[in-house]
Length: 284
Image (cartoon, rainbow, N blue to C red; front, side, top):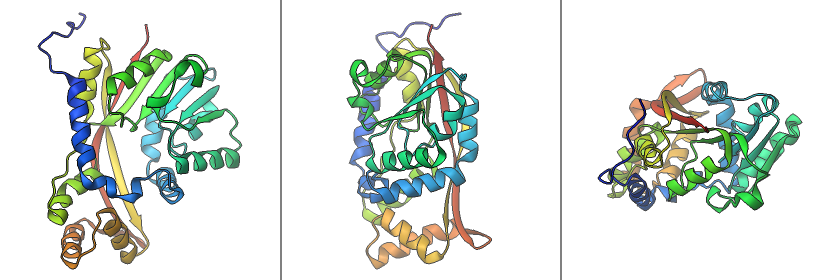
């Protein structure tokens, strides 16, 4: 039985996405320099983490794609090649869209080191991509993995659907990921300001539904780990992340982190679990 078409009384999911995104951007978390992907040091840290801590997620993601040796793949928000590098030997070619200068630099270096020649890098935001001039035709597989930060998600999704001649795969948060829960717990005690979570997969599915795209959905576990050689390294990292500068803020942060800390060998580890969604559809 086919789904009923959206009615005029349905909520405006794209408007809800935009409103949640505005609130999210208004939170002071953007002052955290560790998420500035133009900086090489941040890209190197992310790349190192992705290759040691995200193995399970990467394997699950790639194994769930409808790909062949002849597939042309578009990877939106490719980062340092988290998916593109291990995916490259399995497909014909990949176009990697990535706006962060640090990320594209690391991706280029990894390609050279690993002898990968079938990835083309486009240093732009997806919002700024003009398919007829920036892209080479349509793709068999379009992927946007944990990179859906666009303000107008409907426009972004419409463009993804238009450039696909096969399947589109989106991976996005169902609940607050561990790092975001830390902001939600700490930002008001530290700074007296609320933290607003960004839009999640429920909103994304609503937008797709109102576009007439009845996507498949699968829930997947999302693990996040922070590993440090010393307690001082850990403290410095989180003080910088949460803009901790005063003694009282240091006490708040220390009290929050203490029950989360565990040791594995010589490393100090803080970790948490959440859920993300695989949302995908096949062009007819």
